[in-house]
Structures are given as structure tokens and as C-alpha cells.
Image (cartoon, rainbow over all chains, first blue to last red; front, side):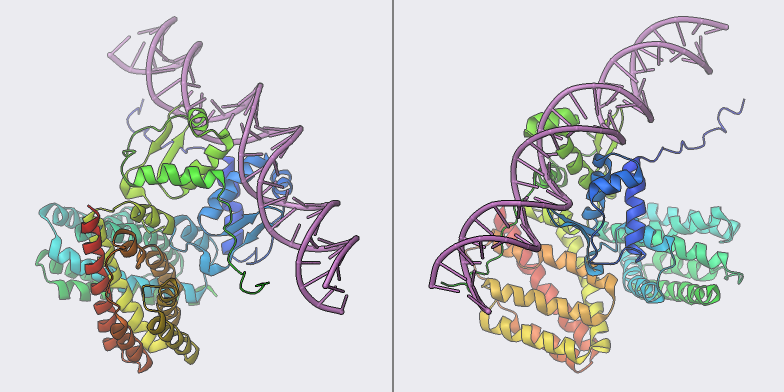
Length: 243
Length: 243
DNA sequence: CGTCTTTATTTGTCGGACAATATCAAGTAA
DNA sequence: TTACTTGATATTGTCCGACAAATAAAGACG
């Protein structure tokens, strides 16, 4: 019975190297492992985690690829300076937001959004196609129906913004905001976790959609900035509440 | 003799896993390994490259971390769709520019630079400190003396732009532009056009510096856009020469 | 016809061994 | 003493062989 409804995704088992990479990675990005310090040797770590050295090495390779560590024979594995971290790597961003990120980092994030997303909206207004507008319109309806207080509504919100980036016809912009999206998801979650209920900026979303549909680049830029401004203020308020 | 002059950097020997990652990685980003295809098994690759399976696996881990491949038991290792690639990872970017990137990709990249770097210059004009200006001024002198045709001059150019990003006081902007700049700046030009000489836009650099020094955000934005425009035209010309 | 079981193949993990490398200390000569 | 050379040493890098786990595909069964 219920064969079709039972399409829950299989939780693909997480492999050991992935777990260890996350453990070490979060320790680094949250500052528990300070920059410049030498991590325990691979054999020690292997014993400590109860895995083989191969697994530890693969975890290390993943961290080194993200600029978090640097290994040299005889020296050991050193935690690199923060300036070398790939902060725009989606996984690194996720690890940073697993702990509470610093206000300055959040500010940097919104500053970047305020630079990139209005420009993307302007491009979208110029390069849009009918298919993009259809996707955006559908997402907008879903948002209005479910509101941002439901998971479905939040998913529609993400789909809406994804469609805008898609319409900008610039794969690097898509890539960049895919990374940022991970962080934004956290800020929205954080906002809704605080006691103050954020408002549902459906009006501003509709203004953005209309501007893009009419090909009005300036209006699209304005609407995007307005939306980001709302999100920033609400996030700041939530962060102040938290402490 | 010549003890002090002998401070040339030791060419740190490249490890096997790094070489193999580069081999497989360039094959993927240049399209020689098409998305969706299954790579040979790890044992086969190990035999093919004449290394152990561990080395192949570490190379795979580095590629998977950059979103280029995806491994599953019984299935094998599949080349992921381009939309999953971490195109803004410095190494991926470098691999793409080691071969001749597609005109559309180059256009996307400069479109992104045209969005981000003028904004960074504007921020720098607002937030600069004396130390930043000193660094920028020194780099500017070095550029003028050595010109962009010498390694010293190119390093000074990098230092100049790095100082601007530093002054913008936004670590995400630094991260983003640093990876783009390092891979792309003038290296592409000299790679494909060693015979002809690019113009030395020292005037434009000085204009940018002056605007930032005076705190004139709009002028800084204009100057930055002018510089990127020059770089774009020269890079396009160089790439046309290449084919 | 659909569902469960078996099978085969590939990656994931393990453990031990040796090689390569770079620091540090000891030794030597000016 | 100072500077350079040499060797000891600790750590990562690589190799090898084996087994475990996961999963798509083929086969058995109701």
C-alpha cells in the first residue's frame, strides 16, 4: 500500500571521510582550531577518530582543496590563515553558519548580495525569455499562497530567485549565488526562529517580477535592493535578539 | 658567494595526486571528458597513470570537492553537469584558462568582474585608510617603473588590485576577486600573445588611485570599469589570435 | 506482473610498509 | 663566534593487498 506516496528520498549514508572532514572543517571555520596551529599527525587523528589513515588523508585532501589546511612532510598539517579559506565554497559557508557567524561576516555577506543580486536582476530584465517569466510567475503564486512561514513558501521563494539568476544568462552569477543561497537559507531560518515574525514581502517580490517582465532594468535593480534591505534589517534584528 | 641574491623560491615538487587531479580536471573542464560519462575505474586509472590506487583516490577527492565528479559504489565515477562545477574555485578557473575558454565563458567572467570590481573600488574609496593608500601608491610606482611587460611589473599590478580589495574591507569580495584576478589578469594575454605588446594602462591605474585617495566613489567606479573594459578587449583579441 | 532475492561490480575502508621531504641539531671550518 | 655542511628525525606521500559496504542489474518466486 501507498507505494507511490512512499517516495521519501533515501538518506544516502554519509561516508567516514566526509564526517571527519566536517568535524575538522567546522572546528577550523568556527575558530576552535586557530590559524597557524599544527593539527595532530595523521596517525594520531586516525586513532582518535577510530578510522584508518587513508580516511583521514581523504578528509584532509577535501579540506586542503577548500584552502583550509596545508600539509608538508616533516612539518605536519597547518591550519591556514582565514584569507586563504574558500569562503564562497558552499560547504565552507554551511560550516560557518552551523555555528553563529560574526556580525561582521553577516554584514559582508549582505554587502555582497547588495552588489550582485541587483545587477543580476538588471541583467534578467534585459535577457529574460518567456520560459523564465513563466517559472518566476509560478513561483510567485506559490509564495503568495503558502506565505514565507511555510517550507513550501520558502522553497517557492528560492525557486523565484533561482529563476531570476537563470534569466541573467550568466553561469558565473548562477554559480556565485548558488553558494550564497546556502548562507541565505540559514539567515532565513534564523530569522524565523526568533520570536519576531518577519513580514511577508510579497509586494516587493511582485514589483521585482513586474520590472523584469517589462524589461525595466533600473526598476528591477531598485526592487532587488529593496528586498535585500528588508532581509538585512530583519536578520540584524534577529541576531540582536539572539544575544 | 651571492648568498643573499640566491633567494629564489624552491620549486616545491608537485605530488602525484596533484598532477593526476590536474590531468583529469583539465580533461573535464575542457570538455574532453563529457558530462555524464563514467570515468575508468580507480584500479584502471591507477594502472594507466602508473600510480597506486590511493593516489588516484586522493585526486578524485580533490575533484569531487570542486564539484567536478561524483562517485558511487557499483556505479563508478561520473562527470557531473557543468552547473555543479565550482567555476569560481581558483584552480578550476586556472584550468579553464589553461586551455582556450569559450567566448561565452569569457564574456560571463568579464560581466561578473564589471559588476564586482567597480563596486569594490567604490567601497574602497569610502573605507580606505592611510596604510592602504601607501601600499597602493607604492605598487603604482613599481608598475610605472617596470611596466607590465616584466614579472616585477605584473606583480606590482596584482599588489595594486589586492590593496584595493583589502581597502574595501569585505573579505568575501577579497575572496571572490582574488581568485578571479590571480587566474585571469594578464597571464592569459601573455600566454597567447607573447609577440605583441599590450598597452600599459598606467594612466587609468593612476586615475583609479586618485579617485580612491580623494574618496570619490563614483570616479573610482568609472575608473575601475574603464580598466576592466581594456582588459576585456585585449583578452578577447588574444584569444582570437590563439585560434 | 510485481516483488523479493541473489549476484556482480565498484567504491569505501583497513593495515602495514617503505620513500620522500624538510626541519632541527650537531659538527666543522673560516 | 659565525657561517656553512652534514646527518638524524619526524611527518607526510606513496605503495600494496585485502576485505567491507553499497547498489544496479539479473534472476527467482508468488
